[in-house]
Amino acid sequence: MNSKKIGRRSLIQGAAASAFAFSYVPQRVWGANERVRLGCIGIGGKGAGDVADLAAAGADIVALCDVDDNRRGRKRKDARATYPKASFERDFRVMLEKNEKRLDAVSVSTPDHTHCHAAVTAMRMGKHVYCQKPLSYSIGEARLMTETAKKYKVATQMGNQAHAGEPIRRAVEWIRAGVIGKIQEVHAWTNRPIWPQGLSAKPKAEEVPAGLDWDLWLGPAAATAYSSAYCPFSWRGWWDFGTGALGDMGCHIIDMPYWALDLGYPTRVSATSKGNTAHSGPTAAVVTYEFAAGKHNHPLKFKWYDGDNMPSAKVLSGSGVQANQVAKNFDLVMIGDAGKMFFKRTSTDWVITPDERGKEFKAPEPTIPRVANEDVEWLTACQGGPAALSNFSRSGPFTEVVLLGNLAIRTGKPLDWDGEKMKATNCPEADQYVHRSYRKGWELQA
Image (cartoon, rainbow, N blue to C red; front, side, top):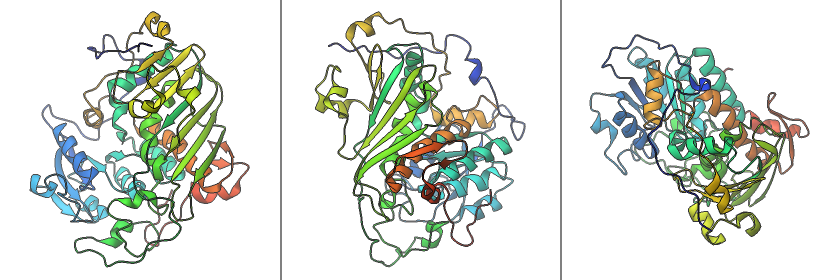
């Protein structure tokens, strides 16, 4: 079958939808040529890219923070050398305190277990926040971050970059316009984890490398001896610090259908997994979220696959490509009562089947604002412009839903979920994963 493809167009042709026409009140009056004064927490690895991208989008880098000298400059020039006038601290709390009057905003590009502490501390000081995905380590932390952003009226953005791109925003419009009818099923997948998981014991202690402040790296997590099996890269596979394959990729891949269908909280979630332990996430999992019927969907099963799991050949049929090629070419398939959409978040070359459905469909006029990228969108919001569309009022509840899959994996039970109360009504033992305990000195008050 031939695929139905869309091209990149000059957008927007009309006014933005009223749902997006709101702004934040800026914390200060902005001059025509003034830039957002930014402090960057985490400047190695992914953080190095975030610093560079935000600077390219127009931010003035005035403060930097990192606990590990060995990560900075590993793949690109050290930010301390690129921005020599920026102050530098190892402890983000010290950076924020020393630069309180110099900073308008901060970026948070640290491991999952420190996202909430850095972001909430900054927001409580009235600073705008960009935070990498997943927004938080736990469901309770995502809720706290959402509420804190609302209370302090700051501009926020979660770093699921494709949310700001043409493929996702255009696909949302097409799905809502009924390109494949009302949605019955969604199947999404990733080949992650690409780091070790399924580990039954903690690694042996090693000597802390020179240049790494291990105590600060641990932050709110329980005291644990250093191991290179944790830091700098493989922390995602350990429950003490990361959220596994689902936490890593779910906020990217689940994003478009979750947004398009305006799903809210699921009523039930269940999971099967291979290799999950008390210490480490599974080597492979399938998570099933169940959602009530909505404007754009029937009662819905939304299935997530990671590791070596994939949907059945029946689900993957009709795409115009071999089933074993689907994983490479697409992120997900949405099944409606009038057809299927095979979608990838980085491309507008998605596939609609049956072929005649795609050919006959009249593309809707754009309604969602288009932006250059997520960094420009957020910095504009910081200066009082329209809110970034992955702001915490949206990305906070979304993160709760993504991380709910880990509750089902870790408890090994189907969970009846009360989203408003953050409660598995049939499984009280899930509570321990909704809210986490913090190391002494790192308590975070609600």
